[in-house]
Length: 170
Image (cartoon, rainbow, N blue to C red):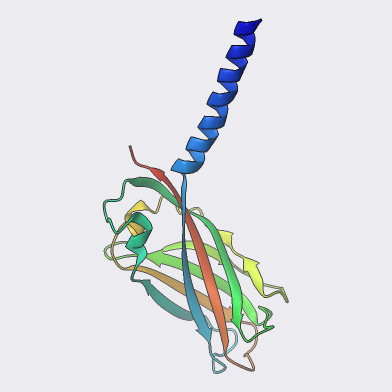
């Protein structure tokens, strides 16, 4: 009976520690960029905005050879920063691409037929496979392509928030 209780306690401790180890080894790192939608942007025309992540290597402790692998997009969201109380009703569609020096541009998230009066919206993730080569390279660039349903009456500042996940390389 004592052996059964001891075995159950050891098994429970092992399962709890495995969960703890798994949460420690799975990394999530963010990237955000702002997109300015000016009042002069015409409706029904795709417009592109590009931002370069100058400190992207800080995700990995400043090491281009970071010991991580299996980097994937895990979450993408767009939200209105200004004007205060603004919403996404003017947006028709949005696409978010990522690339870096020497890599091809890859579509990581998008949303078409946007119909919300909310101030934020989760984007649909595209299965781009692993992004190790892109995020470990220098000069990571995020390009946002958007289309408006109608012109905005004032400038609108949008925030694109991307989250990436990875596991340690062995």
